[in-house]
Each structure stands twice: as C-alpha cells, then as structure tokens.
Length: 592
Image (cartoon, rainbow, N blue to C red; front, side, top):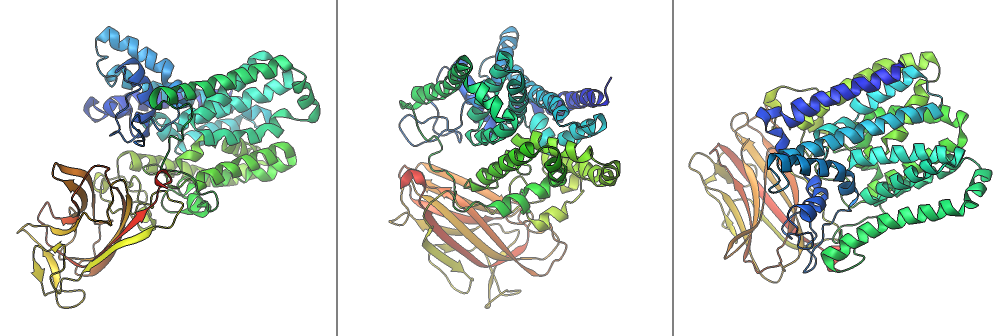
C-alpha cells in the first residue's frame, strides 16, 4: 500500500475519533447540540424551513442570518452549503423519523449528520488532493506529508470536524474536485469528468460566489490552444455546461423569489466590498486573524512557486493569479477579519492550491525537504495547540492582538480558558465616512449630564482630583443618552470608548463588563456586553489605558434611550477614570 494512502486512512481514523469522542460525545455527551452553529444556522435554515417548519417564505427577521430589509426578509446566505448538506440532512431526517425526534430539525440525528457531512467533505477533498498531486509529480513521501500538514497544520481540521456547519470545508472539497475533474476532462474530453467538473464549479460558486475566482486556473487546466479549440467544437458539451450552470443559478433565484418575491436581490444589504481599499496587509499579517500569522505553513508552501516556475509555467501563473484574486476579494470584504473565526477562514477554500505548492516544494532536493522538516513539524504542533486553544476558548474568538497572542502562546492549562476579553469591532459597512454625532467624557471632577457614578474617590486618581470607585457596595457607572434627533430608527452606530483602570489587587476587575443597550417602554431592544479587562495583568497599583469599539444597530421601532454602563457583578474593588465615549453614525448601503 502506498504511503500516501496509509496517511490518508490514518487521517480518516483520527478525524473519525475526534468527530465521535469530541464533537458529538464531548462535554458529558452535550457537544452535539452545537454542531449547527453561527453562520451554519443560516445555511441549515434553508433545509429546516423547507422540510421541517414549512415556513421557508416566512423567515424570522430576528435571526442574525436573515436580512431584515423588507416585509419578506430572505436568508442572506447563498444556498450552496445547504445543497452540500442535503444528502446528510435527508439521512438525518430518516433517522429522526425512526427515533421520533424530527420535531424541530435540531435533534441529535440532524446535528450528527451535519457533523458527518463535514467529515465526508474533508475526506473527499483530501482524497482528490492526493490524486491531484500526481499531476505535478509529487512523490509519495511528500504527498503523505502534505495530507497530514494541510489537515492538522492549518485550520482545516477545525472547520471540517469541530465546526462542520461552516461553509469552508465544503468549498475546499468542491474546488479540489473541480480542478481535478477539469484537468482530466481537457486531457480526455470524456463526459463524466465534464459533469463532475461543472457540478463542482457550480456548487463552489453557489456556496460562496467570491470563490468563482477559481476559474483563473483555466489556463493550466486547459493546457494549450489546441485543447481549447477542440473544446469549442464540442457543442453538446458546451450546452451541457450551460444547463448545469443554469440549474444552479435557477436554484438560488427560486429561493430568493419564494422568500422575498424578487428573482434577484442583494441579500447582503448593508454589507459589501471595499474594492478600492482592500485590507491586504491586515489579512496576511495582522495579529487578529492574519493568514500567515495563524497559518504560517501556507507561507512556507509559497516556496513551492520557485520550483513550480521551472516545472510548469502555466500552473505557476494560474495558481499565483488565482491566489492573488482570492486574497484581493477576501481583503476587500468590509469585515476583513470575518468576525468569530480561527485564523483567516475564507482562505481555507483554496488550501488544495497551497497543498500542491507544498508538495512541489517537498518533492525537490532531499536536502530541502530535510531542512524544512523541523520547522514544519513545529508549525504542525503549533497549529494543533492553537486549534485546542480556539475550541476551548483560550484564544479569543474575534478580538486578538499581539499582546494576547503571546500571552497564550502554547498555553493549554484550564486556567487560561476565557481569560481574554475586550472588544474592538470594525466599523460597519459604509461607503461614506462615519459622522461624529455625540461625544462625552467623564473625569469625575463634577456632575455631567447623562452620567451617574456609584462612588467617587480622591485617592488614587489618574487626573484631576477624583475618580470612580467600584467596590462591594455595588452600583454601576451609567451614561444615558435620551432619544432625539441624533438617534434615528434604523441607524447603524459605531461607538468608541476609552478609559483608565486601576486595580488594587491582581485580577480585581476581571469580571467587570461594559454593557450597551437600547431601551423602550417595552424593555431592552438591544443588548451588547463584554468584559473590560483585555488580558490578566500581574502589575497592579497602576493606571492602565483601554480602548474599545463596537457597532450598535438602532432598532426600527420607537425607542427612548441609549445606555452605556460599566457593571461590577462580582463587587470587585477597582477604579475607573477619564471614561470617554464617542458615537458615530454610519451609512450602510441599504440606507443610502
């Protein structure tokens, strides 16, 4: 048996173990309840609302995956991932019928089968990557190493096994299958490869339209002008491609029409691309999700371009253009860090190309592979540790920085779980510059309009003669802004806050939170809360400066106040001084 085949089987066994023992049975057999999670809820909502609730045309506008921009709001995500789910959903549906558990579509059989979907697509992607490396002459040892490194030395394992309802493992699989099938179609012109390639490409684009940049691989896939000319002479093949493409387009259009009454909509209203100012440096090198920071193995794989240039110029230019376009589109999205994520997750979709590059690199001179062995082994271990950190909430889900990265570097002890906090959101999408509509600062030297402080202290202080004391007497530091002309229903606000904090003892403000809310006579219309301590600090008795930022979508219904508070639920003892709040109005595309 070939060594790459042995590596592939070993990967399947390891993945199956973690699928069953961690993802489904972990945490006292409760982890299965969160398999369908985050964006996965939106993808899964297609199937659940069609076959379980029978309310596909009546989506709940309160759900974060529904774009509340009309009387009939649609699911904002495209239908491709739901199609990828569908065979497994059908199996879960039959299993649930057998067990009598298909009441809401989120019982164990459904969650289990979505977990198996991620496992299966990950396996399929690796299987075809293994076969694709043969095209580039990658030797068996290098192929085995690539399969292991791409799986566990990146965030692919996390999104294939531990968070399988996200779209990325499905795109990784369909892109790999497309490249393999299209390559062999243009060598043999057989109908089977044409159908597979067309379906894989259609599903790839329907999962995430930005992944359509994979067509930049066509110069390599086609090979030469003679093959292209021969293709255009096969009219039946061209017609078949058009039928398959039309099928996928029609699926999405019918979904839009059933939900909103329109055949075409921009379902991401209020979100969009900054094509003129992509955040490329941040996407690659930021301590908050940077691609080469959290997946450094991909940087090493780029060394494969050197040898690939000598081996196959068409492949060299096709891959470098495809990855450049993928990077550009990824960096142009308004939320370049993609919210809650382990590393730069949109780039997972193109890992087969990085796998090819890594295989080509490792198949070069033996001395090159030997010199790279130790660094790659270290990066493999680092990725495994970071996967553990992210899954167990040692790594912050969306708000990392340099200090936090090094604070938890290689830390796996339970005492590091949930210790990182703070919040620095990116401003919501807007093609216009944010407009400052309100600014206030409390230095606690006097009574200021809208402010209420629980206790005032004169020792120690940061500036002036007083500061705000939190202790076991309770109370919250409140700022309340009454609704008037500067707060309009439907606005999108961006709030920046900064403060100075003084701890009398280590971790004495660890539970303190900043809480923002919008209230009406009926109660809270919006709530957002996070802990103010970015990371534990052993240096006490010093004033520290903290910055925060967050978005507030103002509800469309009538409201009364915007309230921002510092809460002290565990009645810890610390001081706050020079608390400054600035409020900006953003102009989303949907409101322009």
